[in-house]
Amino acid sequence: MLFNSLHFAVFLPIVFLLYWFVVNKQLKQQNILLLLASYFFYACWDYRFLFLLVFSTLLDYYTGLKMYEATTEKKKKVWFWLSISVNLGFLGVFKYYDFFSQSFAEALSRLGVDVHPWTLNIILPVGISFYTFHGLSYVIDIYKNRIKPVRDFVEYSVFVSFFPLLVAGPIERATHLLPQIQSKRTFDYVKAVDGLRQIVWGLFKKVVIADNCAEYANKIFNDSSAYSGSTHVLGALFFAFQIYCDFSGYSDIALGTARLFGIELLRNFAFPYFSRDIAEFWRRWHISLSSWFKDYVYIPLGGSNGGTALKIRNTFVIFLVSGFWHGANWTFIVWGALNAIYFLPLLLLNKNRKNIETVAQGKYLPTFHEFISMTLTFGLVTFAWIFFRAENLSHALAYISEMVSPSLFTIPQVHPMAFIFFVVVFVLIEWMGREQQYAIANIDAKCPKALRWAFYYSMVFAIFYFAGSEQQFIYFQF
Image (cartoon, rainbow, N blue to C red; front, side, top):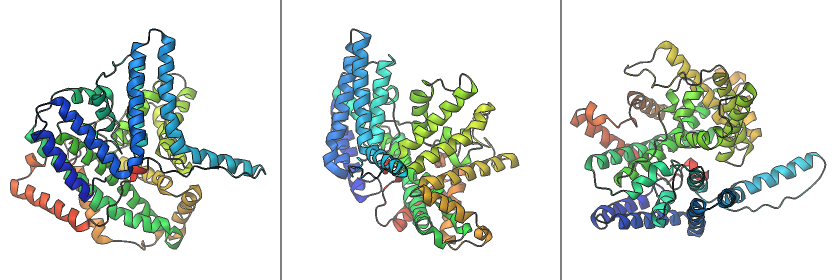
């Protein structure tokens, strides 16, 4: 079930009404309703893979209890590695087996050995990377004695499968989400209105900006040899806005939906395209994943402590793993490596924590230096997105080669001026709201009532005007 579908438009009000007007007096019943709704939400995609979600939940719930009850460190490690190996095993089989099999065969063919690899050709279960990481963080935190296991299976199951975050995050931590699931929740009108506002903003970003950017980005990337270098630049820019508005739009809808049920999820985006360097970008882009890798991979490896060689190694490990998490394709690995190269100079010069506060905080405009820094950072990020979007490495390299040809200095062959106007307006709204949790979070305090409602109606009109076929969110494939 997609957030931008009529099915979800029917599903959400029904669950909301049952939650607050039928089972609102019993926390246990509220959690059972959320669990059943979440399983139904997931089963609407493909009910056959629901068993995988349930099995993963049972595994981590049981091994968590066994680790806590273990009388020796050896027994504790046995249960810990059982959970880790099975979870990563499922992820490896469904997501990476065919990639490794084909890559191994290609390597052998270069040595003159002709092999025909056996591939599974199975569907990637939607959201498997996200709910697997939920379970892994829970198990690791118990093993490290940071938390105690949950005794109530329903509570733990809701933590893993809460439908707003189930298929594309944010990746939650047990220390943040579980206490909310275990506590009584009362209806808060102000929070509910704020949740609806964030949902509408997320839908606008997805349906109006991302889906239209996708149309032009796909047109240019899918037939790149037919276009000029300047059009390639425009294609990369379209994809940059597509992936940001698509994924941050999903996160906005997820956070807003959760708020309707009295639950606050982790913020996942903080206006990353206004970053002044790559380190700031990665503190603001897909925050829940970046912090997950930092806490569970980067810091255990030694982080930025130690010598230069160790810093370089750990930086490449974290970015390569992040790239590989996104998909079984060499393009994602190169994308990760490219971001590591961007990041390393800042780390080695001890400038990776230079830009912590929001750019031009309390001001209308950035300084000239801030503007140049943002433009350069956005350019580097957009260039790296070419590898993320390309079908394979050959396609990415061909696209770049065609982009830097003499036709780079010609007028683009694709220039939808009316839509570019929408993008410019969107960027201005984001800039004006960059100090808030999301761009229009504080609109009630800043705008007169008439102007505010005109803005809301304009967004809703644009959503319905541009809504066509239901376009899947990009991160569903990860």
